Amino acid sequence: MATQPQPMQRPQGRSARIRYQVHRAVIELLEDRTIDELSIPLVAERSGVHQATIYRRWGSIPVLLNDLVAAGPARTAPLPDTGTLREDLDAYAIAVADSLAGPLGVLMLRAAVSNIPPEPDRGPSAILLERTRQLQDMLDRAQARGEHPPSVDELLELVVAPLYFHALFGKPVGPEHARGLVDRLLAPPATRQRGKAAPRARRGPTRAGPAATAPGS
Image (cartoon, rainbow, N blue to C red; front, top):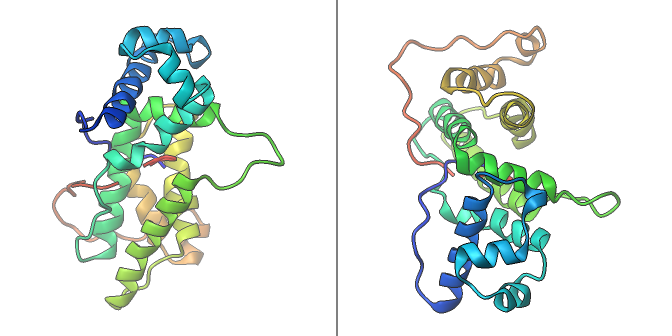
């Protein structure tokens, strides 16, 4: 799942540097090309990495794109831990919305969607499984504080999924829309079914702060 990406920093070590150069080249190429127009020779020319090295390590563009998407969480900060469930959820939802509205977030989303395998091979991605685990940890912290968090499935379906839906099929949403999704998530079930959000206490603007993916989010 996609979340707030941090700037790519040049890593140490030859293998890590090659991966960095190739990933950066793919991101730059996707700024003015479609995924279907990508090719190993184009990536090699842009990255300065020999074609043979790229073929040996990744073999094909789909595999390379999957690796690029999988590397996304490594460039993200931890999930928020503000001390309250609502603040954590606000910060997380706003960070996801901001990430999807940015150029890198959109590219990651396009790459991830283009590589969804057909049935019957489709299943939860490693990125989704890891992000779900982290979100569950955030909800468990709230429960340990005596709060009453929703389930992780409710969080994914009522907050995360709509953010990705808007980014994929319309226009990425802003912070206020993201906070509204959190309001709906925290509303009592009967109120939620009527399409009304839980009342929000008056306070200052929420700061997104560091938050972590997609996919991947």
